[in-house]
Length: 220
Image (spheres, rainbow, N blue to C red):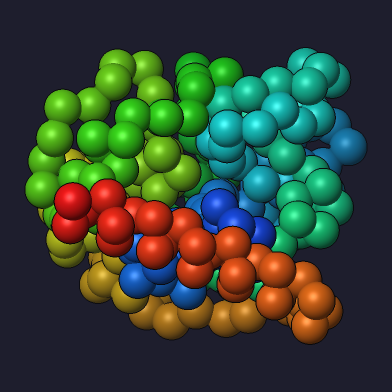
């Protein structure tokens, strides 16, 4: 079971998820942070209730406000896991666990409700690994994860992840395999749900049509 502060990776076969995985050459299309909260509202390492700190474009129930919210929020395990076919975890190194437990709620309260970025330019920049102008006060899921660790541990991004100092250039693929001083070096699957043949066929067909349209537009 993931502990508070562990990095979670999500994959589904929905059309949007499949397109994101293709364009980022990744097995995953979403990231979040495991956060366990006990009945007294305290962040704990083990036990309690498992939530996912994430930023997403869709509205979902948020435990802090008991409302349906967009952007950064705490989403219940039951709600988010059922939307994905695969969930994996990359564990936090234990020497940082105490600091993470102490500072997680501070990060959530300061950043709660920040919106998911819909800026196509920035997405293309992350895909190509090239910095581009980014909309202010918006975050991608992997960007939020990187900034969470930077906030909680008081470290620069490129001191924790040996790829770039620019948070929005990180993608699920990069976070899954880049060297890190704060995360363990391997992923472990914790949840797998197989798609039906019909679901897979429909999703694959739609993605293929999208790619053909995209190629046609590029060569015109």
